[in-house]
Amino acid sequence: MKNDLKLRVYDVLARAFIQEDVKTCFALLGDANMNWAARLAEQGCRMVYVRHEHCALAAAMAYARKTRDVGVATVTCGPGVTQLITALPAAVRAHLPLVVFAGEAPLKSGWYNQELDQAPIINATGAAYHRLHMPERMPVAIRDAFLQARRERRPVVIGIPFDLQDRPWDGRTDLPRPSRELLPRPSPMPPNPDDVASAAKLLAVAERVVVLAGLGAVEAGAAAACRALAAKTGGLLMTTLPARGLFHDDPYCIGISGSYTPEVGIEYLKEADLVVAVGSSLAYHAGGGGQLWPKAKMLQVDVDPVAVSQGQEVARHHLRADARLGVEALTAAVPARSSGQGASWRSDAMAARIRDSKPDSQVFEVEPGLLDPRDVVTALEAALPLEWEMVNSGGHCSWFFAQMPSRPQEKFLTIREFGAIGNGISFAMGVAAARPDRTVVLFDGDGSLMMHVQELETIKRHRLNILIVVINDGAYGSEVHKLRSEGLPEDGSVFGYCDFAGIARGFGLAGRTFKNLDDLPKALAEFAASGRPAVWDFHVSDKVLSPSIRRAHPHPAKTKSA
Image (tube, rainbow, N blue to C red; front, side, top):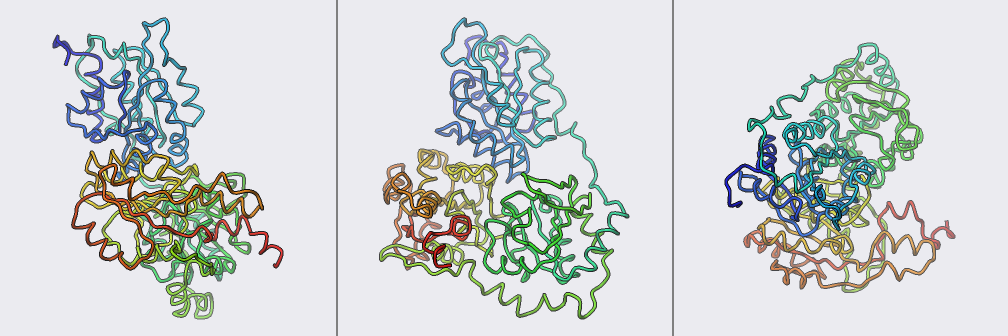
């Protein structure tokens, strides 16, 4: 606390954030943000102090996705800002609203060793950067940063020189109206009747319809409408990866579209003659270019439909509308099916096959003392309580963990838009902060966890109720399989089985190593009773390849015999 009681600029800046109803901030402190952060904490904001700046932003990403609100993080200037550069493009591509309080070097100094032109670096990631150099306008500029983050659904980084933050406040003490009160609240967009009629004609002649739902369908509350459309057309349901689990209890859901599609889904998609994409951006890895449905036309229902996405021609038929209203209008306009039209595709036998088929039936020789990752996921799927929150990380292991059909979308978080590993532990912390009354289970790989293993200490210090499940194949899974497929040396991708249980105990968490699955139910009961975060290390074989790797990088031996 300053010796004098005069209000400082950083006091007012903290109040401006509180005015925006900021309840949680993920932080790593330095000269350029520490005074402001201390005041923010004093005014009632929960501060989660992480060990690496990247993790502050990544945790805020998961918090934003889970709460459907703005995520807030803070870092210091210079090196604090440069550590954000991997997380920012991921947040941009995931359309996550974030505000980052980043300091800037002091203006009064002729030279400062952490001085950096931060704006070009931030802007290059697709995020917005605002320099706040006039104290009197800073409260309004902060409000406008929140307004921009909410409206554009992307990160906004604000840079404020820390010598300006330390000045006495000479401006007005009343604050501007918060962004939430200014943000336009447009009603859901209904479809044009002519467009509905055209789309209904497509559906009327289609015999094998698949309704594919994305995050836009989740946010619009369109799940029931999608089910109704699929039922009326005798069609099937599936989702994009971020929306996985939206139809988890529907017998005609064939899983995730794209790189994570299970075997039965691939088989049925090859037969589809119309895919109705609802609230989906038709991304490359979701199969939006038709890789998985070569016979099908595509109809996109979206407020911002596209013809080309990520370098591919995608939908040629469009219905511009809110996801729910568009699908409801389409369902009403489609004539009821005759007994012969499309009825044979949906059947009790099909539902049983979808239910009973393994996501991946490929047989691998697993070495003694090691586990098949698919068996680990099956055992966890059966044992983990349904009310717990699931977080899937990136990398090779994420394919296996995505195949947990009983888990609903609202309890299973996946953010994969930039393809970076190393985010899992941060995402778990963000979910734990957003859902403090729930147990969070993180599914991660050994290479990914090692990138930010220091955050185990953050989990312990903040008493975050997290169980980390590590699929440990002693390697960077994707890389080792790709190198093998090319017949190249794999040395740079294989590191051996480190002792994650021992590492966890060193940070004060519980740790356990699994080389068989017999003790899983007992271990789960002990974890639930302990209330103590833990790391479970499952040693798996690196001979088990996910279907996405097998499709993209066929093994030389299999290529020759094919």
